[in-house]
Every structure is written in C-alpha cells, then in structure tokens.
Length: 192
Image (cartoon, rainbow, N blue to C red; front, side):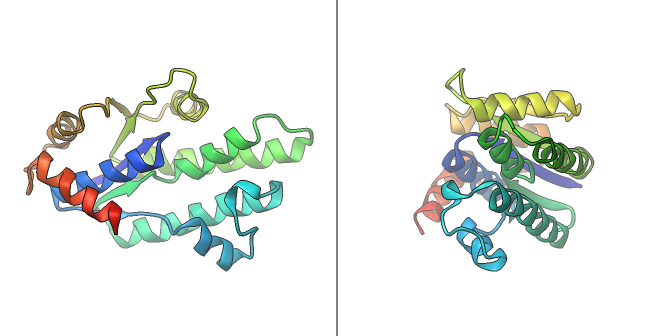
C-alpha cells in the first residue's frame, strides 16, 4: 500500500510537489475540493479568510469529510495534496486562543479524529519545511506531529528534483517519469 500525504505551509509548493510525485510514481492525486465549492455546498461565507468561527469549523469538518471520501475512492495508491491535516492546522492557526472553552474543545476533538486518521491511513507523510523559521503553520503542524506521534519525513523543497528522488527512494517505487519531467508536468498542470 502506498498512501502518501504531502504537507507544507506553502499551498502552491505542496500542490506542485504532490502533482510531481504523482506523475513520477503513476499514482492518483487525492485532493479536496476548492473552498468555493465547499462554501457553496455548506452555505459558508464566500471568502475563506472572512469566515467567522462557525463557518471556519464547518469548513474544516466539511473538508475532512470530503477528503475522506476522495481518499477512500483511491484505495491504496494515491498522493494526498495537503492531507486531512491542512484544514485543521489552518483553523488552529486562525484561532490560536479561544475565549470560550467549547471552541477549544471542538478544535481539540477534531484534532484527535484527524490525527488518528492521518497516523493510521497514510503510509508515508512528507512535510515540506518552511524556509521561514518563524512560520506559524509549519510550527503548528510539527507540534501536532509530535503530540500525536505521527511519523513524517521532512523534505527540503529548495532542490525539488532531489527532493522527489529522495521521496521515490523512500517509497521503494520505480519511477515512471524522471523528476525533471514530473516537475514540468506538474508545472503545466498548475497553469491549467
């Protein structure tokens, strides 16, 4: 089984590396629908950054549910863009301190479920580290990995080709494309 998740604070970097690794291995890409689709489905504020607490929580729960459905449909060979962890870290960074105890309790409960899913469902988690040592997202996700004993492998995304080759070596998969061609294909997919 090769169920892979790629996390990182930069959405565009995570997306490029996910697409490139999928192209290089021939695996499917499991991604969550865009916020605009979830907003329409769950009747949320149209812009994610303008969400208040209730919409933010519904977005995280809805995104987790959608990711579960997508990832279950790919069974045993997929690369998950951002994984189920990204929306959770987003809400934790957005609401680091809560005035009301039930808000913190709701986030902690969601974190327990998401962390359990991530640690049991993904065979490999690659985390593209933030080049900014003060990055809140990067700090938060690494804390969560440590707190829940979620195994992950840090990836230096500066040399993308070398990073992809290391990931494929770690997965013990024979590449169907070179790292260079996989990145070209991923870049073209980003432009679409």
